[in-house]
Length: 231
Length: 297
Image: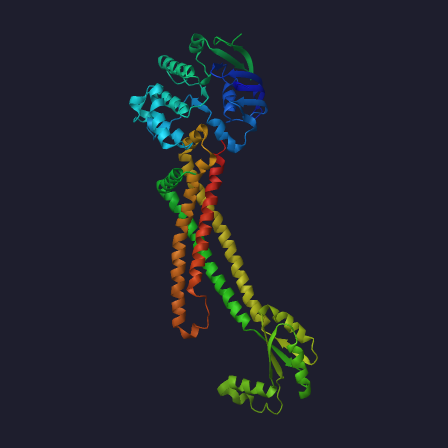
């Protein structure tokens, strides 16, 4: 039971009858860096959302860092989510809060002690390379910088796993590479990373584990794999 | 909950109230109108109940005896009445005394009754009083069973009418209050919904990083509570001062002083506590109604 994420025959059917996932079996080790690729509408986002229980599965079992996700009671979900950092394509920052506040917000709402917050936030901002822009508002930042803030926010509570859904989807190639380097760095420090992406170039170059999801099934699962899912 | 967290919730809840100025105003007004009407009905109903009780306590049973009754038969009847449970006192009024009392009551017009002494149409009567007003019915029934008793009268109709009025006022008040409460709740729910829409992203992020549902709920809980309390202030002031004014007017006017209204205290406290509680209840319910749906992320 040392895996970070385990899925056993996971099915997800939406109320409108769409089969998003049909029998997914997957094991992700602690400290792994995994790309999830596949055509749009193949079930990548559902795959991601099931892990932090934004969506509930129809059949099967999911374990994340030891939590039996489906069996959690409503009031236990916060405990699960404190183990997971989530990052989105559209950053989802709070526009009225500056960089520092956006990151500290994530600690405040889980009632972290003030001292810890004061110490931890600059640390994380240094890690993502935004120590000089703590007072800036999101709209004063570039897209890449905004995504760095979002990454800092996801990291600040020390999650065991980072889940990213198309984190470079809105960024130009050069910035995307910078962000990927940041993810590498984070992964190197021991955090498991699961990333859904469309970025072929990145996947092919980074040579990590690649899980291909097509029509709700895992069609390929390779270490040091490439992007291609057309066969 | 940490004190600092509680401070945060208070601050956030208050901020929302100030931020949505007009919606706050609408919601508070709705609560105000609801509670004002509720308060007036309450004061009215409490006073009518009180008056009815006073009258009820004064109720006595008049027992009419058969016209052909012999003097010797009177005291056994009196004993029989005295033996009924709950009877406090029995007073005999002969028909001659009755006529005298009637004449007194007629005053200057007493001449109309002259000549009646010869052929007194009145009955000998007993005036019976009970320890408890609720026993009156039972006592009256028992007395009816006694021989030579031709009539029992205890102003049942007056008391019943009074209670009917009280009941009606209670029903009408209740309908008004329930209807208005829902309107107020709806308005509060809407006010808070606007706050929630404005902070949808914030709530979403809170949920994603693992804030508990109660942590997210508290500011809205505070907001609802405050809306309810704000809404109860004006009705309390108006009702308490209005009632005080009414009491002063009535007491300075002797002809009206037979109205034994309830004293200002403790009524003022009771009404205040009740209105604040109901205001808070409406506010909290309204806010919880709208938060509920947003927490399912």
